[in-house]
Every structure is written in structure tokens, then in C-alpha cells.
Image (cartoon, rainbow, N blue to C red):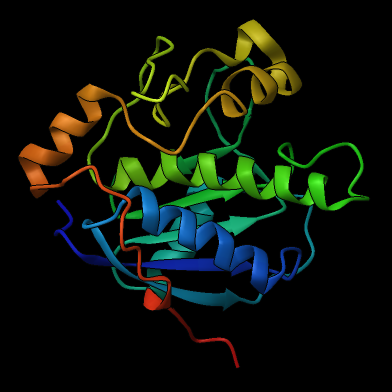
Length: 212
């Protein structure tokens, strides 16, 4: 189990996402996990241009390069080897370490031609990142649509891919998620980490960077 105020390695894989966008995602994670994540280190992982990669393999690669709580963000499709109808995922966590990965491939709007569309991509990526980092801290999926106190879906709400297809899933589930956790998740974080649901006094300079 990760400790409270642990550091998160937020790793850009390739160069598809800007540093400023990565910082926005990092600040979103700091706000939602205020008091649990104490610092985020922004890092860059060189990667060949590929259309897809096995999700577990990518978590193993990152696990060898980074120590502890780590989230990688890639634009490659994340493939999985199992019997589900869909064989790619928006994000996933390796159950044997504290490494998770998120793919922006299916989160990207049809056209990126405006600030609003860029903001939508950052928002979607942040919400999927929250879900996967939540797994790193012991939170589990909600099969049902679990509301948070602000009326949005809890970040851990998963739903079923087969019911929507990917485009419908992103719009119905990912876009419907918020940045605050439901009562069940809050109780877990309070009991394990002594967490208090407060987004006040977020110190954004808790983002550090190993970019050259």
C-alpha cells in the first residue's frame, strides 16, 4: 500500500502531449488527491512511434525505469490479451506494482482545432488518470454509476464498454465523471490515509520536472 503524501511520477511517453497540458493533468491529480499525493515529478520517456502496445509490457518498462507510484500517458492504443470483446483499454494498472498507464488514443476529439477541444482532451485524460491512480491507492471499480457529492460520476465509476462502444463510453462515462470521489471512496481514503476532502490551498509548485 502506498503511503500518504507519496510522490507520483507522471511520465509523458513520446511527445504527443505538451508539457503545459501535462502540468494541467498533474495539477488536477494534486487537487483531487490533496493530502495523499505530496508531489508530482513530470518526466519524459523516449518511445518509438507505434500505433499500439501491450499495456502490461508498458507498465513493466516504466516499472524498471521509475520507482514507486507511476502513471504513464501515451497516444498509442493499449492492448490487452484476454477474452473480452474489446482488446484495448483506455487505461490500466499492473496489479504487481504501482504503475498505471493511460492512452489518449480514444479520448481525443475527432478534430483538435480549438482551445475547447484541447481542454476536452485534457479533461478526459485527467479523469482516466484519476481512475488509474485511484487503483494505485487501493480504490476499486464501481460497476454501477456511483455519484459524487457534486452530482457527477465518481472517478472510479467504470460501467461496461460492451454497452456503449468506445465513442459512447467516453461520452457517457468518462465525460460524466467528475474530479471528486463518492462517499465510499472518500471513506476508504479517510480510513487508510487520514484523507480530508479539501481542495483548498493547493500548492501548484509541488510539480517538479526532470525535463531537460
